[in-house]
Structures are given as C-alpha cells and as structure tokens.
Image (cartoon, rainbow, N blue to C red; front, side, top):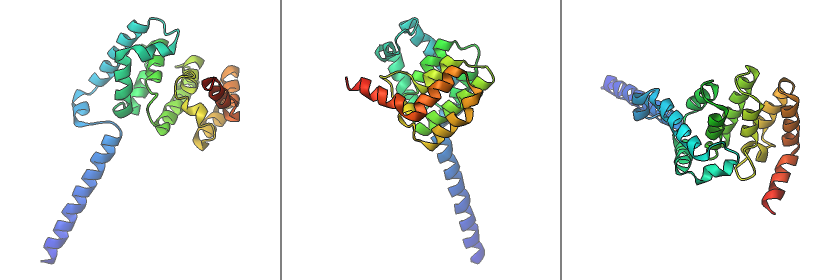
Length: 197
C-alpha cells in the first residue's frame, strides 16, 4: 500500500514539473503552433515588416506607422506572441535594412519593461560587434515623444542605469551624451513638457 502512495506521489510531481515547464515555455511566447512552424515565424515577421515599409515609404515620421493597419496588427501580436529570440534574430540579421529594424523597434511599444531592457542590452552587444549603428540604439532609447519611451521614462530603474553606465565608454560620443541626458532625467522631463503643450 505504501508503494502505491509513493508511486502516485512521484507521478504527481512529474506532472507538476511538466506543467511548470509548459507554463514557462508559454511565457516565452512559444506555443505548439509556433514550434511546428519553426523558422516560418521569422519569415512571416520579415514579410509583415516589408509590407509595412511599403506603406510608409521612408519612415520620415514614425507616427505614420500608427496609421498602417498591418502595423497595428503587428503591435498587438508583439505584445502577446513575439519572442525575444525572434527579436534578436531580426536585429542581428544584416539582410534586414535599418528601416526594417526600426519598424520592428517601434512595434515593441507595448512589450514589458523587462523585455524592452533585454532588447536594449542585446542591441548594445550588437553595437559593440558593429552589427548595428547609433541609429538603431538611439531608436530603442528614444523612439519619439509619441511613443512610450520606456528607457527614458524609467531612467531611475537600476537595470537601465547599469546597462548605460557599464557601456558609456564603449559607445560613440553621441550615444554617450544621450546616456548622460537619459540618466540625469533631463530627457524625460523634456518629453513630459512637450507632451503637456
């Protein structure tokens, strides 16, 4: 009788661990359909961004994106389904143009601050490898007054401060200056003033 209880308890533990693993997998944005589609998700993302670009042409004003139906759909999809690994892959891919990467960055407007910090940190590593330039890192830091500006708004966040301080000497003078302005809170105050006009 005691062996049966031990067996049942072991089975319950295995099932609980399996459930936890599935839950964590889903938190990363991977579901069964995504697994079956594999790299197809990446191609779908590329195709969506190319289609969005064709509707905004040169991205002179990032606010033009807000009028593109496909961008609105991508914005909502990214909030719920886009994985960090897919974002990293897209940013690192030299076949994607600067404009395509910027469209992706704007589409991250609704993700969590933690995920956005991950993207920022990854972009700095790409920057150090000369795989992205100042423009991409700057767009992540400051997408524009009409966007969430998560890093600028949360300039007191320990993680944001650490990423910027640790990399000040490794970035261009221009980005170094931007890091200083962000960390001082001046950039956020300026954005708030502009928004209140």
